[in-house]
Figure 1 (tube, rainbow, N blue to C red):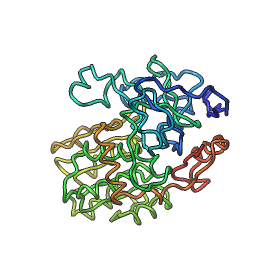
Figure 2: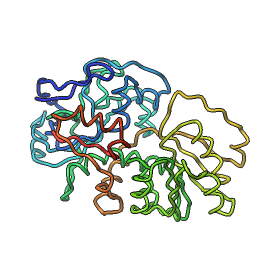
Figure 3: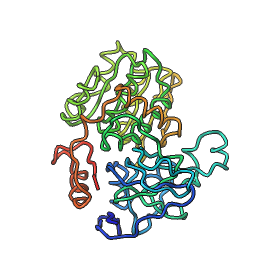
Length: 356
């Protein structure tokens, strides 16, 4: 089969590789679409965002990775006869499988399992390879192939992974009906978060970015306020709109030191800022910004049930995906797809999706 193989940082090659044979607990999916996530871009650049985000450590990546965890497709083969009745199903994919034995798994916090296998990250943990969806076929665990029983496109379905991440972030931020929420960064994840918190009952959502295009889309998708932080101080704007009170929750998809500090400054007493982007940058923080029981925390990946919540949000129309899928390219043009993903403003791109 044809696959996009990351040989080393910044070197992606199309290669003919063996089609995966599903093991007993797996099914084989003919990939319908695979999104390029921000973490895929970071892997391409030689970083390991999964290790940094979940464990807080730097880890090197092995060579010859098949990236891609934002996957949808059709089941075409089963590793065990008992799963053969699923052949032909359109599915989305929960992209990781936890060990089920560690402390975190026993608490239902599978996203924190250090023994996890994650498709598209290959041998980053020293385990067996888990090739991703930037290929014609991808083997996934049968219980993580989620049936999609309505006429949703493969492109939209590929974004269920990111939508589940957004659901987890909203829970981590403890968003309640009536809350005011600021979303820092209006890329695909930010745009899904703003819709998710609206679905959870947020009364007022502030979308913040430095680029007009995603802010325009944010407004169409339900943002009550859009703030171009390259032209206006988002802290002053939010405090002026909330009579100096601030917002009950901040979801920060950027994670730069400046935005972390701004996120605390715009936070109401008792509020919570959740970081979705963890970097190795050092933040100079005046601890008085945490006074009033303000909380700064991190959201990592998603929990299994949250993927099903994401499916429900998309199926019922409470979250829209199409408005921010700007580029769809065939697998044969994967190098161009990454060029676009690396230079989004130049190409007017938000979400880039590959269709094998």
